[in-house]
Amino acid sequence: MNTRPLRLISLLFLVAGLTACGESEPPWRGHDITGVMPELAYNLVDENSELVSAGAYADNIRLLFFGFTHCPDICPVTLGRLKAAIATLEPAQRERIRVLFISVDPERDPPAVLRRYTDNFGERFIGMTGSQAQLRELTKRYRVTYGYGEKDKNGFYPVSHSSAVFVFDPQGNARLLFNQSLTVTDIAADLERLIDAGATVETRAKGRKAVAQAATGAGTANYP
Amino acid sequence: MVDEGLLSWLRLLLPWEPLWPLIATFMLVLAIYVRGLGRRSQLSDMPGALGFLTGLAMMYAVMQTHLDYLAQYMFFVHRGQHLVLHHLGPFLIALSAPSAVLAAGSPNWLRAAWQRLAGSLPVRAIYRVVQQPVIAGLLFVGLIYFWLIPSVHFDAMLNARYYWLMNLSMAIDGLLFWWLMLDPRPPGATPVTRGIGVRIAVLCAVMPPQILLGAWIALSRDVIFDVYAVCGRAWPISPMVDQQLGGLLTWIPAAMMSVLATLVLLRLHFRNERARRSPTPYPATSEAL
Image (cartoon, rainbow over all chains, first blue to last red):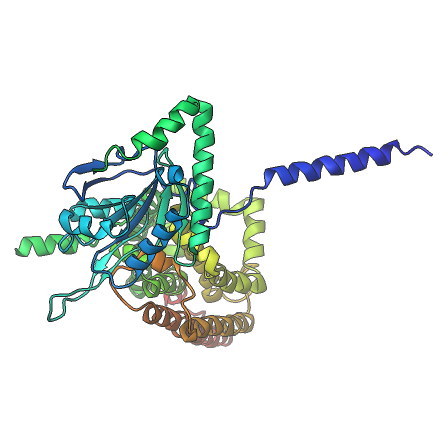
């Protein structure tokens, strides 16, 4: 009996199966926004009262979060979760990450207040804010918004803002969106994977030396 | 100070995300309609004109003014936007039976192009399929459900392209559906002019699923659509209140539109019957409203 066609067919199935397995990467824990959102761009004032644009902290994975320091719940919880996730990473990996906390309440959050606030979460956290025009431009770019409620008799007012963390790779491309349902483990896993992917890209482009430099030098250069 | 206030009000009339082809389409339709009104200069066109222009203005306002900003960042405003795009605006436009005025206002080349397009076999075939009563009803309800699947809704609100696909699909389906339902011509006049009974049956059939969906949203104890928290709301409001208002807007006015349309159809039926019995034909122009 001639079994050649049968063998050929099973071989085809095997190849098809292997290719299918090779192509499918495991999904991210966060929401993949690659290609959906534009690359990182902003003009703001940082917690040291210096003008900053997206060129600052380039080569770092940047986590963008919009909030305000008087926030009673979402901001401290989210930043705390990011802090815990970053703490689980290797020291060299931590150096590759920056959390940009952007206050949408510039009236109550001048740079000095922002600096005190972000210091609670560690050196990888940088506060930024800007004029209403700058903030509106930036939030619209990422299809998010914010708004202010009525002032109470103590002058306190609530602020509505995005609860998501936007993650940008070292090239400034929008990659992931972390919402409130993600755990510390989920966040750490995605960050680690992004760092590894970035390292691979850079290894190909610049060689291992550049990676070592970026990991130790460039990461902290801008931070006092 | 007064000028500043006025300016900020005028700014609300500007589009949040300008969609130039859409603005151009609205302006073209408006120009053709007004030109048609002028050319016909018939007083009996006026009630229809009121309906048509109101419907057109409403659909424009929810897509290309500051209302669109609010619709992107408040669930209940979004539900109001879809109520206008899928129900109210198209309902008024279809009710105004604008074909005659639009034809009178169209330049010859446009009328010829339209006739060529509408006469082509594939367009006629597709039109007949989507205007088949059962398919039209399924599409009408199916689209509401589809865009409210939480994960689909999430992507639609976050991705500009999906967002416009969602809104335009609702607007186009709304126009098709109410055009089919409120067609003033006597049943059988064209292959897609259905009997009054069939249309009332479709209107009744689309009501319970909308009520069910609206009630599920309004009465849910959990936040179903988390994308509004992810993107931030236009002003601080409890997510549950936002969701309950949105649920009510999906539930009550949407179903009311079926009842209203049924009344319109009954009136049309009695008029057709009278016209059939009386020796003098009913004047065609009164079909406007």
